[in-house]
Length: 161
Image (cartoon, rainbow, N blue to C red; front, side, top):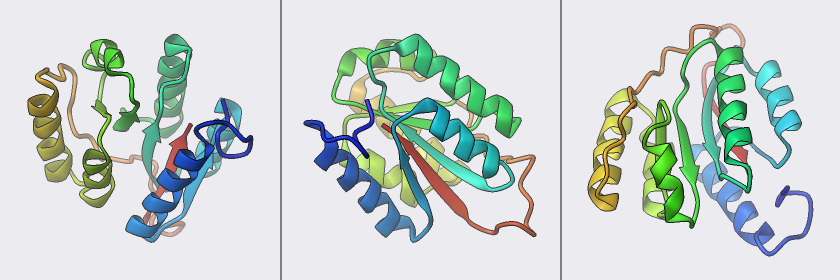
């Protein structure tokens, strides 16, 4: 569901998240609701550093494939923060590579404000403690092998809702 361009019960929250991220980061933030649109942006921005955030939506397998498609485009296992109100999603996210999970605005804020290997590892530890779980396949990889400093020197955030 595209909460950014279609009026839904979650539109106000989606726009809040997008604006909050943009204000905190001071960078380009792309709020998209369609997988094809997000992949198109990723293909255009593959030489930039991307901070990836996503809600889950109704089709978990499609979300997993989508994140793996992004990783194939970027040529590494980019970290993704899944934000959702549904705690049951933690059951599969804790097994998904380089994935973080939150229902908390404070974790969301920390993710975008401390996007570094140290910051992501600290956040992982907090999430594991707060949700009493173990994120089994997490390695804070920020290698960005396609990054081209001539094209960009900053991060850009992609929020998929």
